[in-house]
Length: 143
Image 1 (cartoon, rainbow, N blue to C red):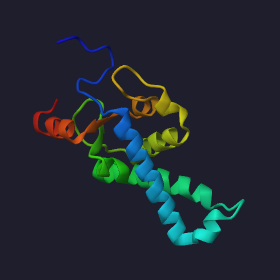
Image 2: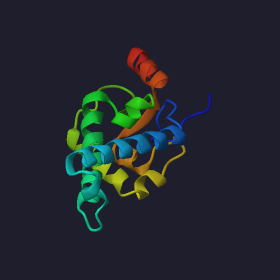
Image 3: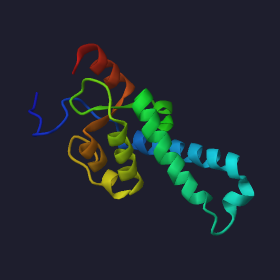
């Protein structure tokens, strides 16, 4: 087995395809929540703040769900989980996870990533995104 580079996670991370699908699901769900509250007409109105509301719902939903359930709605739907980069323990700091989601909303951090598949947002938060199979293996064996 080859050695991991310094500061790499010792387990496989999820594919970018599944992560993008999860992001699409999250954004669609956030849009639908906003439309349910403001209405389709208001959402489509030029200059409406409803577009910004979608971003706020996305950030808050993803941070809250990740803290409580281990992944955003989209990640849970695509069988992905966010775990500590060390592979053990819980995601215990909701402010760190909120900062992680803000970084994702800035778009650039997820596009800058290491060989282990973790984007800058994951590196800053000390997290990694894994498949459900890897998550189960981590929670039963520790790594």
